[in-house]
Picture 1 (cartoon, rainbow, N blue to C red):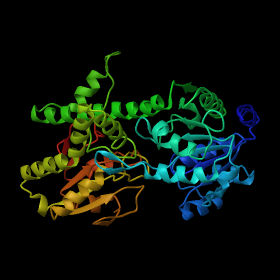
Picture 2: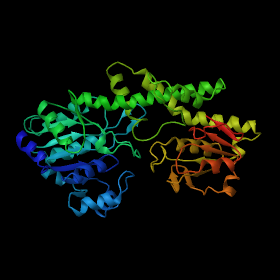
Picture 3: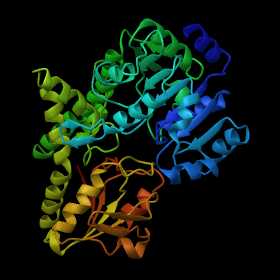
Picture 4: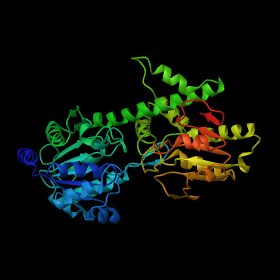
Length: 432
């Protein structure tokens, strides 16, 4: 089994199935298809499937032209029918892993995918989980379910974990340029996983176990959430001390060692940073070891939207204006700059808090023409002199690079900048 699958991978004759065609699954499916592998993407969302079939991308980092190229060469197909797993040699699981509640992981999408795989698991298949999860998921949850078929891992089939490292909107690193970590249940699975990923990625980093690879991903995002939480707390302290946090960071950056710049903001969003470290926190707590840094950082970052609103109230009071009597323009609503992605965006929390305060709120975002989420039902307004003049304060929440900040500065009564887009101090500018 091992030699046969190894030969198929080397010759690019291995048939690949990717379960989940979101921001992780579709890019990796495309990457292997571009290298000449036959790839079938599986997604229960029939709209996604139809869009792929028609060569229309819905992922920021993938162009429709790229999709059409592999479709024309019959290297990529899309379906909602899981029966295609029967003929797959390599199966990648790239499904969402949200939270049930703030500190409780939800691996139901992984379990559903594995249940489908079990139905079609035959000898000689390699199964790889890419979805972020807590340490032990591959070994303790997936392995026993696959072996319930009577097949043995390392002999009849192979099982590995490789954490996705995709950063939406990052043009500096193409997918294949980002080193790929892989860990497995046994040595045979690891060898096949390493060989498989080397067909696309420039560098593959094998680690001793699937559990180690699962922890690598969580450490990466824990590092970020803790440092963002730290700098947010320092920013709040600097405000009390009447110190410009942005100036402090720029000066600290000049040290050539021992410092890495992180920046404060209105909170954290996206799929990874707000959620992934809490998977590690949950696992550690179950082992009787509470990870205090993760919980504290999460609480600090989650509190930032409310802190921004309180700061905004004080700024307006200084101008003899009440928040409920003011008109506020939110500049940028996506979770990060230059991406069309609202997942867990702090802007949504800020807008929600403003609406609950009976504030007259509008927004502008070049990537999001409208917002219709929960109690928010707004359309992006045009950024012209007449519109800017209407608002008592412009709140910079997401720093899209395509916006003309000089124009905004010169035509706004007051700006509260939570992202540090303005480097100098101006009369009508307040910084976080």
